[in-house]
Structure formats: structure tokens, C-alpha cells
Image (cartoon, rainbow, N blue to C red; front, side, top):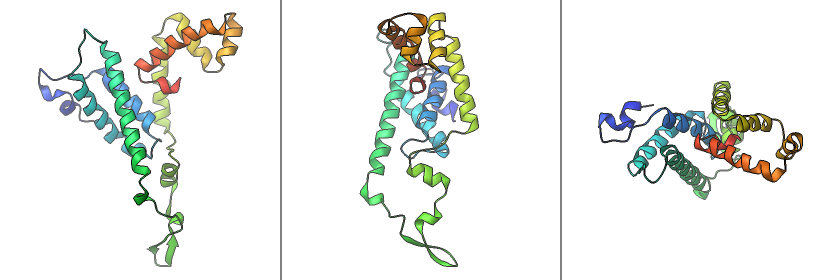
Length: 201
């Protein structure tokens, strides 16, 4: 990741990116991978794209109007939605569709069906899947733990319970109406959204 170049190039007037900004970009990229045909090989390009859009958006940031973290999250979420929308539009382009039964000349043994040349990477891409690597899964566990640990006791307890229980089951167990618990769940979702982890809640 070209940190210096994207971080304003040393200009004192340019927006600066810190740990929060780089963290949310990395988390959102991990969520994009496996969708719309994107794979782990696209991670660096996606990070560069999101950071570039974030720097552009931060030029209009006004601290009197919005909190910086909420503003950053909104920019990144909007950029991700645009990237996925554009990728899906490309996939629907009929000019890019080709039959897997088409014969291709790849071996000395003569033509073979295109389907026979497809490996796991292409197969997962066709199904819009890209299984996360052990490294990505470990990083996700770390990210989730950091966010949960930073929460006040009530929300932290709720987050831990939601790993294995439904909202109805939690409400019955702690003896509160589900409607009451829904307010806490909304606050919990806001916390995850602000750190780019909403999709994992």
C-alpha cells in the first residue's frame, strides 16, 4: 500500500489518514473479496481504490457538521457500494458471456472443453466466492475482539451472547422484553458500523 503517496504526499493542506482510516479500508476490502468476482489477488488494488476515494471525500469534511469517524465510514461504505455495483454491471454484460462447452486448443492432444481448464480460483469467481485465507480469518477474529473489548459492559455482554444465541433466546435468558433488547442491538450495530464490521454482526 502506497501510504505516503496516498496520505497527502506530505502537503500540510491535504487530508491525513490514520489508523482508523487504514483499518476500516482493510476490513471493507476483506468483505468485498469473494463478491462480484473479486479475489484475494485484487486486495491491493481495492485498497488503493478505497483510499483514493477516501482522500477525495475527506476534502469536504466539516467537523462542525459530522463526526470524522462517521464521515469516513459513510465515504468508504458508499465507495464499496459503487465498486460492487459497477462490477456486477460488468458481469451482466452479455458480450463477456462464453459457454463452458466451447472448445479451446490448449494441449497437444487436441481441443478440450473450456470447463476442463477451470481451476478452483475461476470456479469460485464464477460463483462469486473466495474462501478466506487463514490469515484473513485470524485478522477478522482480532478485529472483532478489539471492537467488542472497547464496548461498555452491557453491549459487550450482548455481543458475546449473539455469537451463539438468537435475540429472542437472549431476551428470555436475561428476562427482558425483546423490544427492550432491540434498542441495545441497534446501539451495538452502530458500533460495528462505525468500525466497518457491520457485515459480520
